[in-house]
Length: 502
Image (tube, rainbow, N blue to C red):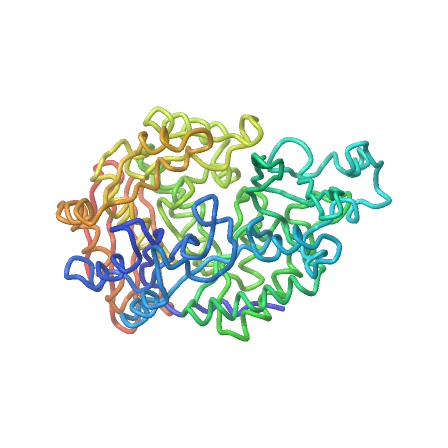
């Protein structure tokens, strides 16, 4: 089936954790209603620490209830009351080991009603490998050689059952086994869900119904490409199973009036973004952040022009951004930029203080550089302002990372405090109410907000608009027209300045 990807609105979307500013979602809601920010945003992407979670700042979900410490359903209602639409996360591939389902498995073992809710490694590989002395099947080499793993070794967690046996379960992402003083063990981590289980599909249905009850309009599907699995397959973006999964989730989403935004990082050359668009889904524009840095560094607008016109000509509906809670995507640019140019850009961002996290320690397996966007631009506020103006005139729905809006630089102290694996904290600084107020008084931040209000209110910025994009060396010209209204941007990448006529 084809998804209904018609955008409900394309106004700017604030992106933040519930406690990113002032320590709570209620403070963010109040800020959006304040004279400083009123009229700047039409929606908000609230990251999943909104839910009851325990790891990865929200992406290890115990359950999808509101956590109550930094947010409440009243906060969500307040946002809706201001006309702020909600984008929320749903993680298809896994749940926390502290979820009720996994706790039930630990308590009742083979008698648990959630025995097949998670993926029993030995049942999955039965007939496709040899049993080891440690109680798990070692898959046949030819079946596992092309499998994509997020970490070294087999992705299993040995789960102790009440009868004293240990059963291996599939665990793609983080795990930690904690030995207690009494000799028992506890866990941290995320366990993969068995999408062949009816109880998992009941969980999917109940979760989407709950998110719709919170007022969600867009659902970001995190880690969906890992969910379909089969022996001998890559087990990342298996085809056609990945698209069949999305189609089934779309059927549920349609019942609750939800639009889906599948989140996946893949090289431009692979064309995954095209398949998503052709199937009717919103597409994350993970190409724009790197293309803008390339354009500013080279003072050449031609690649931006080509990408913008591809979006327009294909009719795809994108959500674009500069920074986000992860990092600046780089692997995604393969096929849009030469490999040597990507390497040059990464070197520039690292020189400016960014961190590169390679998968399994392998070079050229990175997919992002961890940095604030301002620091990636050499802490040049004029460059950030120009990048923001171009983003807001690009086709699609602009998503605005709170730290970019407030002009935040790389937070090395946060990385140090987080310890090993804490590289992402460089771009996740929490602002106190006082620090946020101070940032909002800065001239460069005020100019960003002026741009956001224009993008959010001017009638030219419509889903039905005609958009024209043209490059002339270092100049980029973008014009939106709709029902006699017109807004035009003249961006000069060499002089790092712009002008707008609206």
